[in-house]
Image (cartoon, rainbow, N blue to C red; front, top):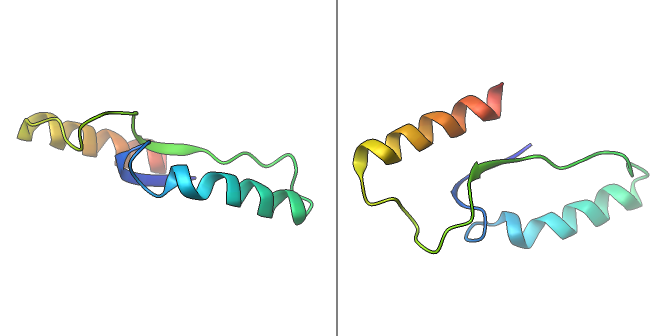
Length: 66
């Protein structure tokens, strides 16, 4: 499970995903999937509303440990 607070297109996930997949493939873990838990793709780094940001963060943490 990859978890990040930034939107999917702005954090390290977009850079690291292909490298992690290649590493798993080379280690003979071809059927292992990398799951993503974080904010969806977005042009802005935050919602602009404090309450909405806290709700998104709570949802992100819950989905990570569910």
